[in-house]
Image: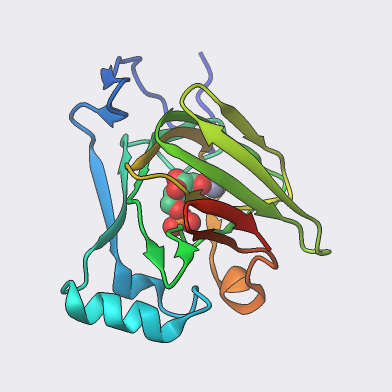
Length: 191
Ligand code: F6R
Ligand code: ZN
């Protein structure tokens, strides 16, 4: 067996999930982003500052991940768990990113909650795919992606993407996503 220098050898293994709750048992990595990590992303900066102050910088979203080498050939998987809520009237969302290797896609399977996968290309195309339990969204290569929670419970999604994809947040910080998702009197608006 030839083992290439690009791709570490690993033994197969199994991970257990609580599918109904959208929870991965014994994740190896746990990333936490509190509301303060979202500065610059919401339209209403004052509402975000108020939320951070009044709720003592509450949890915004978490990522639970397996310990997979960030290498060509491997597949990185995990659970993204986004809290419900609004900043002003804009629904809670993740920062969003392009993959550094932009020709890499991603699969998201919604396990719990309701939301949208908001996507955009560098030339300004925008799409929003609805996610409820059982929806799988295919994020093709070239599309930046951000999860948005439109519901009242955490939005939990299982994701998998190529190990060498990497994350480019900087371009989204500069460009934004063009469209935003709001909740007003129980109605969802994509504007
Ligand atoms: C990985 C991926 C997800 C997100 C997660 C958090 O390529 O798309 O695991 O990383 O939903 O969102 P961001 O990375 O935008 O903070
Ligand atoms: Zn991604």
